[in-house]
View (cartoon, rainbow, N blue to C red):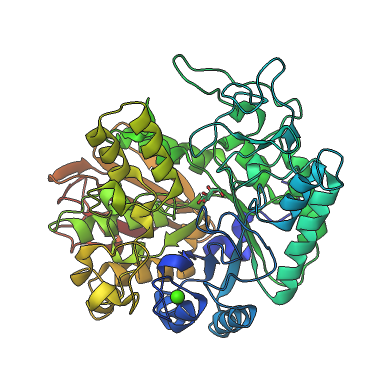
Length: 578
Ligand code: GLC
Ligand code: CA
């Protein structure tokens, strides 16, 4: 690393913790059943008590809500469902008053099909001046336009079905890697890029502290848009090689950095959501010397319980796979790259149900264990609303319980293919994004204190026992455990700076690693029993006199060469290496 460039571990955000708010499900102030900005304002003290440094807001812009706001029809306003720009300014002021920062969701791989850019592009026809702002192509030669197989290429949408929709008026198709109401912008057009940068500057001038960039590594498409490989028996091809980290992606992110962030006086945070990104690519994206983004969200570890049938084909997680993957990211990014650390977000099922044990006996304990393992890695941790309470997956019993477009499309597609209904429902119950979107559980009153009306999606009935109010008054709660983990990240340099060394990589039940920080002569040992049985482990020498930094159970003995971990027990110890 050149001497004049600081490594990512020296950045202000290296000991920050980000809290993600999914506004629709967070807190409803006006009883319409949908969370809103005023609801968030009323809960800022809670977030500040937790100790979050940065809040990331999922989209609150005007939207037809085909994909819950990830389909934006106006980038420079607030959807009336959530409030007004004046409410937004009050929220931002409230966040800043409490010493926190606010990061917006930036969804610019695509807009809504109701965005004026798209309606102009569509209605102006092939020679219109906004035509080239989106990706339009004629039907496949020799095919009947609008019929199956006539799409310009064989790519599949991430939400099932073809990635192209036919516009009969102009005789052409537009590309949408997500729903048909989410047409992809054409980033190869410099006017598009400048319009996006201008909009981003507008938000920064308003006072926001950065952006979480939705599927940002999909913005550069191979201009030839070649057919993807057809897996055997599939109806669509895999277009990913032609647009995941496509040909001009680094050029565009570096340009965005120059045009929007360069020389900015405030401390900002940028995180690129990047499905399919490799460690090698991520290192390039996050190397501070390259000035692209501060960190990325990668997806490898949340795909490890997927079977050959894709995301809804759920398999038990092998702990060795999880350690191999996260361990490779820890060491692979080296000194010049930086990780985002997450188990949960608005697209993932709840981690305590997925990788922990949500039965009453071990729910809190396994939630604390998962938190410990994640927060002790090198990188910036993200907490998704309710994770700090150990919120679990929803007990969905029928397709009528679901709201998410991805789940509903999948159900429709699989039903048409004749898949066994119980199998479809099982996949959805485990993996549907709606698991993350049930309302935040504030207290034990009706609808968990989320709304005085009827919630847009049912509250998890376990709110009676699992809620913020109960946990705030219990010093042993998952909430207070998360609070302590955040505090530790603020105060223990080995968490931020320490190198990472995995122990026992082949063990199927033990997750163990050390973090050594030469500068402060401290070393941390993290041990975690991923299972419901006692586990006697061999430990490295020299830990018997160490201090307990945090643990989810009191120690039964000093950490001598062997120690017996109880079910889902985790411990973090610290010693001096001076
Ligand atoms: C991202 C978002 C997801 C959304 C998709 C399309 O993956 O996290 O919620 O559906 O992009 O915008
Ligand atoms: Ca509301």
